[in-house]
Image (cartoon, rainbow, N blue to C red; front, side):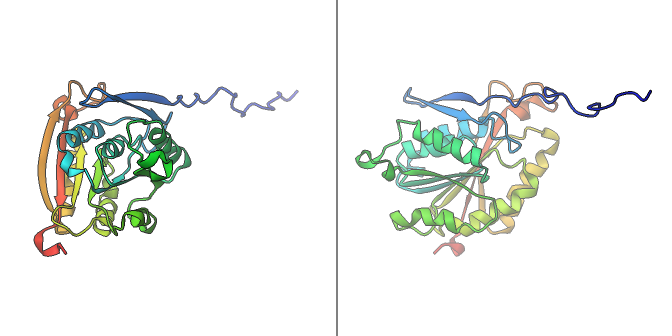
Length: 259
């Protein structure tokens, strides 16, 4: 008698572990007020983490409000969108917070915006909210992002935020091309790049981002370095001091590229 193998190759219903549930984290402003940030349960784009780079650059903006207040801000690869939300709270004229156009990611960014009562809304009308979430693929046509600036009569952004994105080595060129295409050609226009080399043995590849930026004519300047109490991924390999260190740089236009 032949053995009954029906269903032998079918995987049991519980074979794959369930996706982890969504989580939330709280960020405390220097004022003592708090922002609750919802994170997606899992994302191959790493959006289920609240990265140290986003925390550190948000704190930097709180102590350098003039970098943000009254300006048009664009964040790439935002995840939960903390730096963008802080920018809106600090008085940015318009903030466009973006991540890959995955519905779950965009909906989650919108959820964090709508759930933050600290964001000032003119006349109490949600249509006047200074921050909007949108999907965007780095290096793609940014026309729909620039369209968000029409109500404030600007054609490009004054401030860029890239928090903990440099580990995406193959995307460095696309990130920089997006900055080139959408950052206004003014001496005061600034791209803030804040990151940790979570894989210390590839730190040279993280830093190659700035080589590309210099080749494109940007002025690169280091503005901060902060060592966290512990590494974000404590059990990961590599130099712990490097994995605990958050570094911030700016990209600005040189005089001959300003209009």
